[in-house]
Amino acid sequence: MSQTKVLVVDDDPTIALVVSSNIKARGFDVVIANDGESALDLFWQVKPDIVVLDISLPGIDGFQVCRRIRQTSNVPIIMISAHAGHEAKTASLECGATDYIPKPFAIPDLMDSIKMALDGAVYNTALVDHNLCSLAVV
Image 1 (cartoon, rainbow, N blue to C red):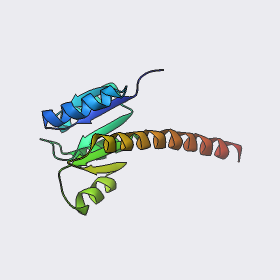
Image 2 (image 1 turned 135 degrees about the vertical axis):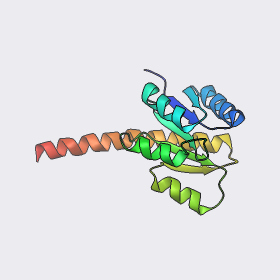
Image 3 (image 1 turned 60 degrees about the horizontal axis):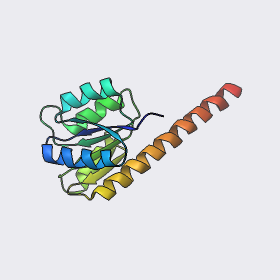
Image 4 (image 1 turned 45 degrees about the vertical axis):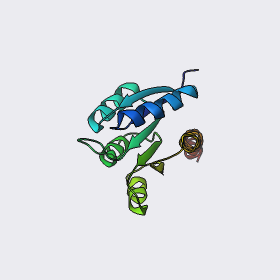
């Protein structure tokens, strides 16, 4: 069985390193991007199981990255941001994010969100497959 692949996208190298190190320590395979364009390139190359995506990125911002991924993939996306207020969370969820975590955040909270998103992705895949079988029978 292959390791779960996580794409971490943050323009702050310190945050990217801390987040990726903690995710790796829990047995995940991690790749890092520091801008939106690199994030999209790595997404298509690596095909991660989940994406941890900052909103504020140079060039293509996190909202645009999320929308582009959503055009062809249902992979879970957890948006992280220093943007305060309900607006950033709402905008994240509206563009297709699975969850939103404001900065600063505790690593255990991020790991809980990753676990729940991955568990939900497995459940959703099973549900979709079940529905297709039901439709084929009916």
